[in-house]
Length: 167
Image (cartoon, rainbow, N blue to C red; front, side, top):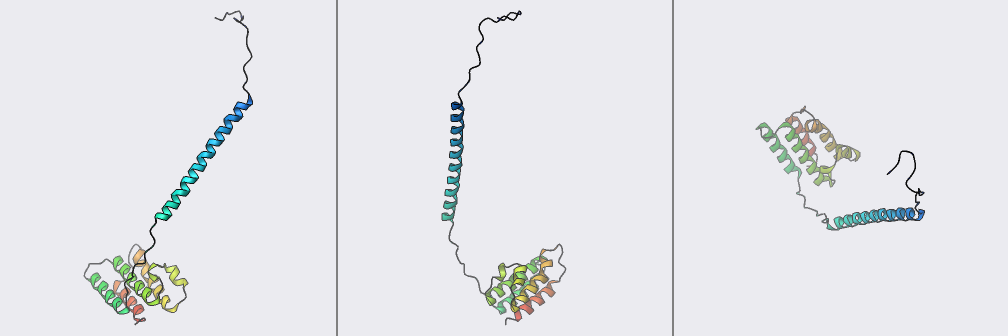
């Protein structure tokens, strides 16, 4: 027990110092562990990517149904009749008209017009594709706007004009 007068019960020993060797060894082991974890994660990620790539099925070229201009004209008439009968909304009719003309252009011109954006259609400077681009530009507000400002009859007539150029 300590006494209040400041006398200590025995000799006081100096603090024991540790060698810097132990600190260096500890940091080296920590560095090796971190490096091993990074290498492990990198190898796992690399193996996962290779396995995912090897498991991916090869793309299959599906046969595309051919759309002749005459078939496209019949389909345009069907869309117009379905809209008049109330089976298609303005937006759905405009989407379908765009699909018909793009499919016909794809088959007629040999370009993937059904997968191209308006900007891509306009970038290709081909006279026959310019008509498709003009039709798509005309249909865009009705397809993607809040309200369909163009009439389906007017859109169908424009689509017919584009398709008739290929007959």
